[in-house]
Every structure is written in structure tokens, then in C-alpha cells.
Image 1 (cartoon, rainbow, N blue to C red):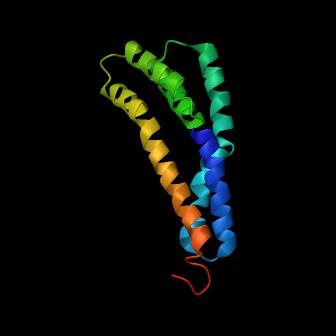
Image 2: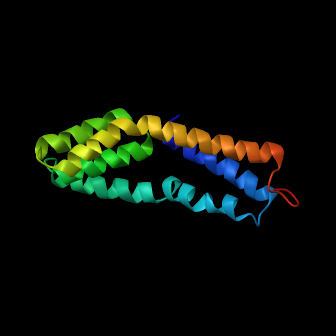
Image 3: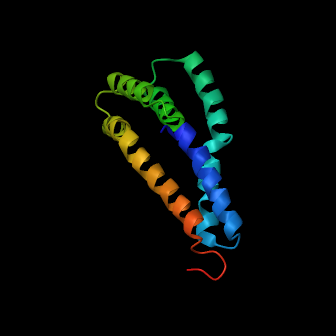
Length: 135
């Protein structure tokens, strides 16, 4: 499941868990990171990237940031292409090579992490653990 679909879904489960017990810190803790990825940050980043790309396509940094943006949207194939372009433009950069390795491994890691988060929140909803008098 791409992050663009998984984050809103995880947010829905988080909000349902908060409804069960609005004073439970561990449930409320999940909301800000989800909102960070779902809301305006991607819109702002997209606008900045479009401006930067219109000025220069031959920047390793712009290609790297564009790759991370595509990862956040769940477009891992295009993200890897952008990261590869960044390495081609600056082949001696160890950070760029490391980021390319991260881009290759992220689809599996994110899928596992989001799956576990959704599974945990679903379990909380089904069992009511942590609701008033629980835990």
C-alpha cells in the first residue's frame, strides 16, 4: 500500500482510537506525525520543487529532494530514478549513494511499518485495551 493511501488510513484508525479514550497519550502521540505527512508539507514542497526544476535540472540536490518527495507520495520507481540521476550528477557523493540505497530499501520497510501501525491501532479498537479502566 503506498504511503499516500496508508497515511490517511492510519489517521482514521488513530482518530477512532482517540475517540475510545481521548486522554490516552500513546494514541494522541500518533496524530502529529500523520498530519505532518498528509497535509500541507507535501504541497509546499511540490511548489518549491517545481520552481527549482524549472530553473535547473542538472542539480544533484534538486534530484535528491525530488526523489524524497516522490517517496513521500509513494512513487518509489520514479523516486529511485531521481536518486540515480543525483548520483550520476555527483558520483563521488557518499550521502547521495547512501540515499539511493535508502530509496531502494524504503518500499519494503515503509510497508512493514505502516502495516504494523495499522494492525496495532486496529487491535486497540477491537479489544478496547487502554479505554477507561483498561490496560
